Amino acid sequence: MVRIAGPDAGAVQWFPRRPRVTAPALPGLGVPAEKRSSHGAVLQAALRRVLHITETGMGNVQLAEHGMLRLEKHTGLNRQFTDFFASCRIRPLPARRLPGSASRSP
Image (cartoon, rainbow, N blue to C red):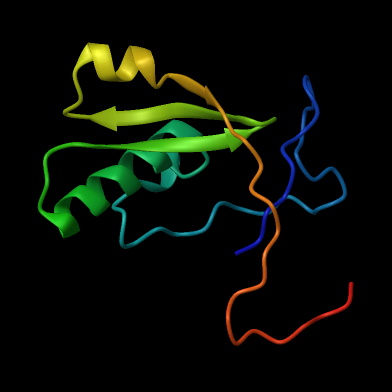
């Protein structure tokens, strides 16, 4: 897993030096070509796919940004839940080495 800090507030692009390319095909998600660059459409399609695979009717997608978790998309959750978890502060976890992992120097 790679963790990258979110863009600065008001930034136009997250990675300004990265070349922009056409949005990739997402065959497993069923996102039409004209919606592949829509953040919301891709997240909603991913949520639908996971709910189908796990055979459940409720779930959510949360994005971590600037030390906060933001509830971005949801299905089947009541208003009390979504209001409560709309935005939550993230406490950083202390770094730790997993058993059996090799020590690496940065």
